[in-house]
Image (cartoon, rainbow, N blue to C red; front, side):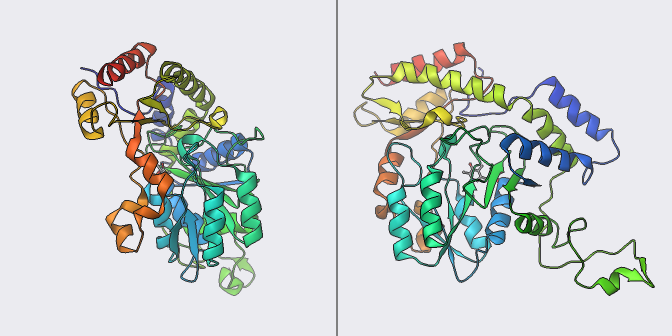
Length: 392
Ligand SMILES: *Cc1c(COP(=O)(O)O)cnc(C)c1O
């Protein structure tokens, strides 16, 4: 039996060839493909700079540091995200703070952002998550952030290929200081593991380059100790400087070979996802048991997921039984996400689940249905038939 999962990568023969070509070249890492990939993504989204890193999580960590998150301040985000968004604040020594979501988009609520900013003047960074690729209202969030002196780091792990309401590409950083992408196999395009940060700010770009590689930026930094960089006026060819404490978060050329090849297909990937979404939507229209979780603003989404809300009680079942039955019949679904505020670690930090009523209402009914480029119409039809059968 062919298992149908909630998400997976699409790999063509030319992706395989691109990786093989890299393996046969002289550089497996720190060669030319990393900057080629960075330039290609920067061009695609329309940002000035891009820094590719080993994962989306590494990107969020470096972005938090470059945005100035530290012991004296906090980062505000949504509980409906992967834990990495909030963890990045803690990695940087700051505090994660959460705001409730809107029922119609499952994105962070503008009113909740304003309420949290009023209560927590220490919030330095707002990290909106474009959930499932549906872009947050960045015009409004930027206005609120500017008014509070906060900076914005977008978690766009779901949103490569998404567009803002003005039609421009998510990641162009016209509303934020930085935008972070992930290239995990379930995301829009993959590098195996990998991530990337875009920015239009040169100082931020240079800092990200340093932090990615041990605090050493061989290309773009002026020396702090220029006298050590030369001997009697002749440059010391071996010289480099560690200027601050960084990490080893580099990505490899092998991964960027795959990324470059995948990026060429991004628009086709998004188009296929959109077609599948339309078919699901048409089937569930008018159902009182199952409906798309996001009802507003999805036209500009890259459709990373197809999250629905199911009234399990009215269908005479529970989510656990329902998912188990789907799994038994070859269909793997998932829940995106267990609210971060509900995790034992975050409960120990003082998070109170009851504070987030829309998060809780969504989580009680949430299920992500299979959505990926290789899902055929026939497979989708069988998923739909199975769902309708189990829902009676
Ligand atoms: C996938 C994901 C991340 C982390 O990306 P990795 O590449 O897996 O480290 C962060 N935030 C969100 C919303 C994600 O979906």
